[in-house]
Every structure is written in structure tokens, then in C-alpha cells.
Length: 101
Image 1: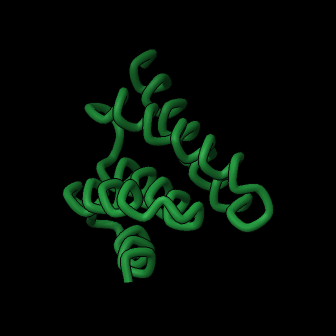
Image 2: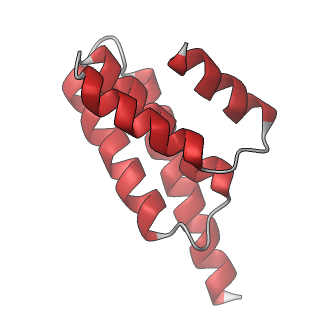
């Protein structure tokens, strides 16, 4: 029961970071980069217990943040990492495809 609660808390935190980074994308690039970087760090740390779609979403958001910040080479690497993660959720897949197009 405690492990499941921890897994849920981690997933919720990653989702919150991804959503907050997305919300700040055009008015605060620094915050967007910080939040998406934190999402990736937590997603990677907890990747063994998180859905792969959430890990991919974190990497996609980070890649998008880097792209908006005109850090294109880093963005490409982050988006490649997102694409290497199995994605089964249609909205996560669509978002990744939109960001990489």
C-alpha cells in the first residue's frame, strides 16, 4: 500500500511539473525550462515505477522547452529520448508528434 501511494505521488508530481511547464511556455522561459528539467529528473529517477507514457511526456515537454529557448541541438536529443520510450497513450503520442514536426 505504501509503495502504491509513493508511485501515485511521483506520477502526480511529474504530471504537475509537466503541466506547469507547459502553462508557462510563452511568458516565462526560465521557469518552463526549470520545471520541465525537474519533471525529467523525477521521471528518470522513478522510471521503473511510472507509466512509460508519463516518462515520454516529461521528455517531450523538456524538448519543447529547449526548442522554445532556441536550444535546438539539446531539444533534438530530448525529443529523440522521448521517442525512444514506448508510448501507448494517444494524446501523449499526438503531443510528441506535434512537437517534433
